[in-house]
Length: 186
Image (cartoon, rainbow, N blue to C red; front, side, top):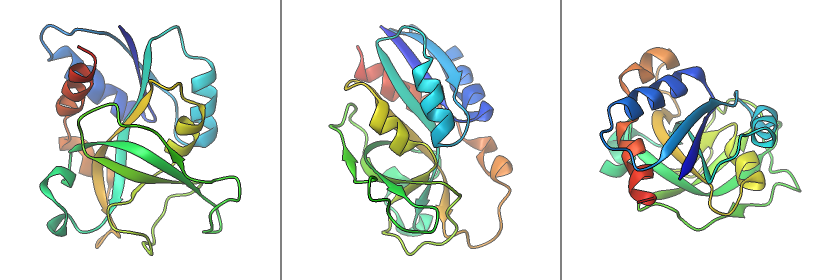
């Protein structure tokens, strides 16, 4: 099966390629493509993908809540599948055309709801265990039925101290996420 891993950032592409290189006996053929950050970049990337069977949006995600209060499957570096996406307006409101989108799970991972915003969300008057990003809604809106989103938890909102995102994510390994994808298409 030809699987495209669509990553918003170069660092996610590097981590995906590194994990793929360490997987013995891959059952599928992978191509990792960087889409760029944001809704527009995601839409453009989806319109220009090479022929494939499945596309997986694979990338980091902030989650609302304190790590110490979240269950083990929602800890730093853990992969989760997004099965609901909502669009959050720039001024902090839901867009009228941004009604929640739903999809059936494609993996055996924990599933969560995602909130896509035009800007980085710093405030958290949001439900705990909500995933925050800048791409999921567009992907969910444009994807094919077999495509899905797998996010890796990279930080927790609200940030209690200022973080250097790229330093924070250095230790995250995408191997567990690649294993989830492989097990979903055996």
